[in-house]
Image (cartoon, rainbow, N blue to C red; front, side):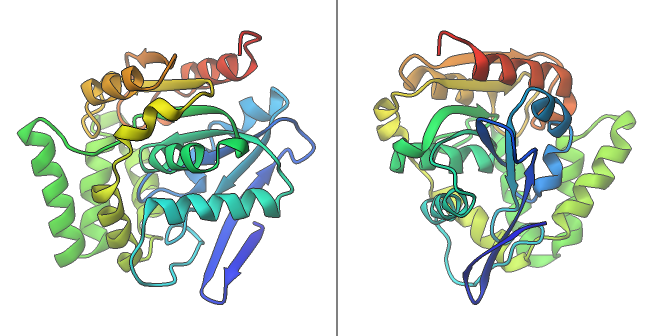
Length: 267
């Protein structure tokens, strides 16, 4: 796995799949996950001719956490450095949940680097309307500050993959979450709580696809509809059988939808 050293204490690990492919696509994972969470996308996108850049966001997977506070804008700058390191002038960007927030920030702050944008089960401002969702986020915040990563991992995995037949997916997600730096995980949660780019969404002039898992219980579908409505000319599709991890729940439909969007001549 290649490594980008941004400072003595900050290293970004990433995978570069099908490096001879074109155009490049940058895949950004969700909170607690790692580059491994995109494994079901690699074969399809490689076969379609794309180059895939798949990093571990700082503090997650094999990437390090340098300490201190964290902002989504800093995570976006990490991705700018990664694209430069990989000799990429412009890329499509696909981000899920936290990765979608980073993708939004990247497209807003560095529009010359982003060709098309795919936002999956994500948000421009994380303010749930339902009490049950507030309770879930409060539980995650309490667990990460009191009981540690193991309990956090189990709570998140159960929420994301609730069905009895998803036991293996829960195990895999738990393993990914346990790789995170605990202090970095807490810093990322605080960064996402402060994230708010609602007033800037009208600035986006690139093609944008919003993908919503109809059964998402983490980022409510209504919030995702509002996100799509605020972005000029954004398209939105709803995957009926998918929850928060749409790229894992329904990988074939997800891959087909994203590849079609990225290769649509109308774009």
